[in-house]
Length: 246
Ligand code: GLN
Image (cartoon, rainbow, N blue to C red):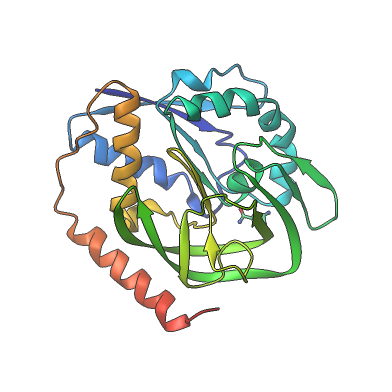
């Protein structure tokens, strides 16, 4: 099958080689005989999010975020409709923050958000940095997700909002709630950089399966051997565990 992917602002939001997540989608899809058709979306470019099966937004610092925030906020309603209709989405760090209602950066100025995720973010004085390990429930499939975080933003979820995961080690959304990221339908926002997907193949396949369903398939993906990927996960999870709760 053909999986249509929109990559938002690739020239602005690509800190920590977040683009590597797209390479993982591409490779894991190809190994099952599916092809990704990737469209890079620049600020101002026309986009109908509903015509994509998967949307990806990477991370970036406050400066880059400010450059794309108004454009992303304008696309909010269309993005919400697409996610309501089953388009899968992964947003990392700076992209995650901007898909909430607003982000107040280090200099105190406020950026508008797209309002897809029910949350707000305000930058704090101290950055929250280090390896992270999460306990995640993907529609009944429980797994751990390992990654790396580096953010000044403190993200507060609205009451009743669903986090992406619970923090086993690391800081998470705000360093206090033990919650990490946010989930709405098949849309996931998270602080985990990395890239995130090479060491978390279960998450990569869950998103790919949702994208395939949106494309009209049954979402079945043949299991892969994933020896190196599992090893990468174990090493990364061990690093986070040795760091403990902060
Ligand atoms: N500027 C944001 C923060 O520091 C996001 C940083 C990032 O994407 N690493 O909270």
